[in-house]
Length: 77
Image 1 (cartoon, rainbow, N blue to C red):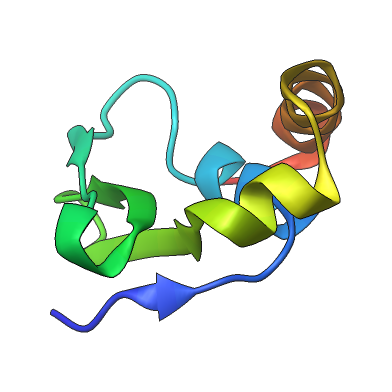
Image 2 (cartoon, rainbow, N blue to C red; image 1 turned 180 degrees about the vertical axis):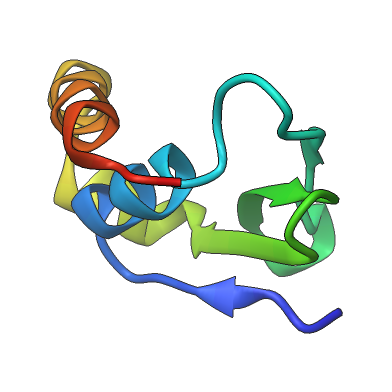
């Protein structure tokens, strides 16, 4: 499976929200040598990754958590 690469903390939050919740088998999909953090969903066969530097540059943890909360409320999966 080829990971989907996103470039902002907001994109990462939205992409992850679609694969959270009951019935979704998720796992860490980090690529430490490439400096990528990520999550995967075995249920849908997807992996989402973001360069750590881009995550830090486009949002702090509080902003990421707020974006994740908004995305969960609008996610339909």
